[in-house]
Structures are given as C-alpha cells and as structure tokens.
Length: 517
Image (tube, rainbow, N blue to C red; front, side, top):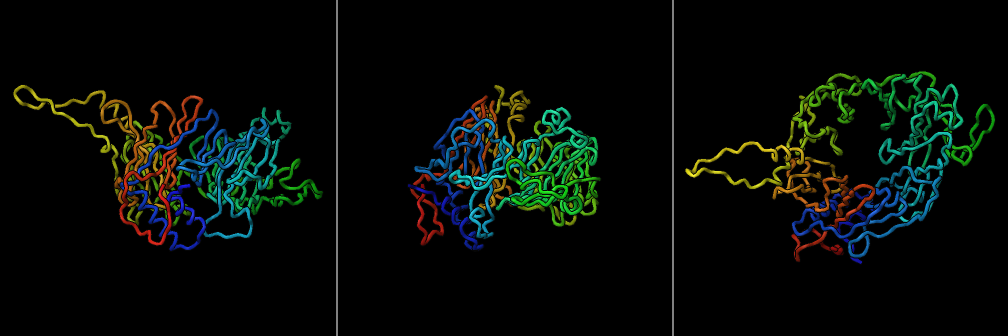
C-alpha cells in the first residue's frame, strides 16, 4: 500500500510532543505541497442522497454520518472506517462534532488518546464513538422533555454546547411541560468539557430574565452571548453565573438530590441532565455592543478587543473597542464591493491581524499602536485575464472599448468564496470563482497564498465546480475535498496530491523512508 509523505508527516505530528520535530515536519510538508511537480488530481468520488459531512482529521461522512472514510487507502483513495448500517428513526443523528486531544496533552485515559465522534441523536442522547472503528465509548442521556437539536463548539477542542430548539407555549403544552417557567423560556443550553466528557452546566435562557426581545443565545468560550432583535449583543460571564446560581452539582454518573431526596443519577436513562443553574435575575453585564451588519461581533487582539460594524447603513466602517473598558481603540474603513457580502474577521492564527474578503479581493490589516494599517490586497482577477484584441479603423485609429454587459457579469462571477489558514503549512488558502478565459462559463481555483504577503504561490484548478449548485471546499494537507449539493444528491469529489514528473526539487529528507503516492 502506498502512503504519501505528507500523510506520514502528519501522523508523526500527532504522535510526538517534540516542538522541534513538529516544526521540521511542517516545513517538509510545506515544501512537498508547493513542489511544481506535485499536483492535486481527482482520484475518487461518491454520491449520496443523504447528508454528507467533511470532518476534522481527514475524515468523510456519508448518509448522515452512518458511513465514514479516511484518507489513507490503497492507491491514494479513501478507506472505509465503519458503517453503522440502518439506524432507527428515533435514533436519527441530529448533529456531530469530531474532536481529539491536544498533541502536547497526555492522559492515562484511553478515551483521551482517541479521535472521537460526539453525536447528538433524536432519542435525547449524547454519545461518544471511536472515530476509527465506530465503537461506542460513552453515552449520556440528556432529556426527552427538552428537544435538543444543535451541537457546537463553545471553546474549540475544550468545551461544546448542546442547544435546544426555541421554546413556545404550544411546544411546551405538546411535551407536557407547560408551566410559568417554560412559558417565558427561549432555549436551554447544556455545556460539556470534552476528552473526557464532563458536564459543566445546564441553564435556561429566559425572556423574563434577559429581556422579551431576545432572539438567540450561545456560548463563546466563557461568555454567554445573548442576541436581541434591536441589533444589540449582550455578554455575560458564565463562570460568574455558575458560581452564583448553581442549584445542582454538575457531575455525570453521580446521584442528584432535589428537595433533600435522591432524584436520579446525572446523565442516566430516565433521569437525564436537569437544569443545574437557576438564574433568578439578570447577571452583571460584561458589556454590550450593537452591530449594524450581518457580520456580528468578532474577538481578537492582545489585550482583547472586539470588532463590530456600528452602522446598519454603512457596512464599510468598523470599530475596534477594548473588551475590558469598551473604549474605542481604532476604527478603519474597507473597500467594499456591493455585489457580494463582505466578510471581516480576525485572522485564524494571529489576533492582531484582520482579514477582509470583498468581491474578488482578500485584504489583510494589522492592528498597531497607532491604529489599523493595511498590509496587502490580493486581487484574484489576475488569474483569468482575457486577451483583449484592440479594434482599429481602416485608417489605423484605435476604437475605444465601451463597458459591455459581459464586463458587468464578470463582476458578479469574480468572487472569493472562502479563505482559511492551514497552520501546519503556515499558508492561507482561498477558493475563487472567475469568468473562464475563453469567455464561456465560470472556472474555480483553489489557491495557496503566502500568509505574510498575500502572494499567490500555487493554484489548483477545480473542474468539478458547478455554478448552479451548492459548492463546499475542504482542505487537509495532501487532499482537497469538493462537496457538490445539486438538488437532493450530494457528490464528494476527492483530489489527492500526486507526483506528475519523475524528479523532485532537492529537499531535506535524509534518513527518512517515505513513499510518494
């Protein structure tokens, strides 16, 4: 079986805690990926009429997570990890998170060392599966009275939040839990630590406490963020809430006492996870901010600042404010293209930099003592410039070219679909759609960019892109996964890094036995 160099380097990273070895492996992997003789080519595809998900750690899930593949099969193709087979309707999978422990973190627990699949199902259970073979490691019963539907990270690789659907009086009556408390309840949130699974708290977000105009609530690290219909976001400290409003000890597997008597075992079937907090009045407000655009609020900087757009009429002006005091730290304006929704957020790996996606451009800004300065702007339209033949009269005069409908169409087609950061390679990668150079249709590119300068280092053509369908691109070291949802059918296209020439540029691979697929 042929296994790629990049794949083995990745495995070494997961198995070692030596910082120097990690840096060396990442440097070698970056060199291999950027080799001119190494190209990404489509080698495999699979169709599904059910939900398809691309997960962390190079895994692919089909048929609503019932079948899983991993990127280390024969001939560069994925290998099947498990197949759950048919699942009962009452056990339907609602949401899934893939997680693993930190590289440097060691633990005697076998569960700590496994890559795990955290599954929320319709029967009210939160289950932990081994992501390599599908075996059940642990199960926690949540509730059937509360309809939990959403599973999200609260703090990446540390804590998850399980959120219910939003309550209504009709829903409460249907579930037989209608009373004075549920009538004003918006939703319920249960918070868990992962590796191993531990309950942190379970709380109800109530309209009587947080305001009748609340629309949603979620956790961001240790902050409870409540969104209001007026455009305000109000933040509260979760540790403070737990300290002052705890009524039940949040320990899975232990007896819970309610009213001085044993009521049941936390997380066991038939009892589940009750509310561990009873919030009787609004907690102290950390701060509030109003965001006038769909971009919401982002956090970054050191010391921490938050980024928001204060005006609903102008989505090109942004304020940076201190998280501690709320004072204005800096403000800046962006060059906005009205044809596409802009994206402004902190850099994934450097909270002193701000990324801005607008139309066919990606810009990077730096937060400095004097304010915000622009570092670079990359315009991807240079990848697809048409050859223009000048028109001339019989006497030799050049005829000026007017703006035509095709030029306007190109502005709509030219767009950066996504930008992400690959920390192992220290590279940005962007997915871009552009008008084809022959003037007929759209072409898509996957581009590697220098993280510091924005220079396009390498580009990969994506011939599987469909303009009239939903397209999602996922990248993981030596593979690109392209998910196309067209109608009720999803197609997963698998691109693998492959050597196309007989020679490679010299690299520091002495005394290392690897095989390039």
